[in-house]
Length: 64
Image (cartoon, rainbow, N blue to C red; front, side, top):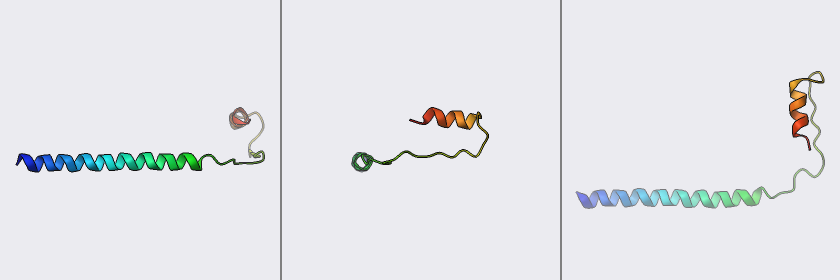
């Protein structure tokens, strides 16, 4: 009985290790994909509300 439990524990640990290795691999691939230079020109944001509202202040704060 103890060896069966030991085998299940080993299988559980190997599955966790495989999942962690896959997560690290995918994170590395995502970091390479994020290195693109986009956009090349300024982005124009059109706000369909009156000037001076909360949405305008929010978008102006993030504009750079």
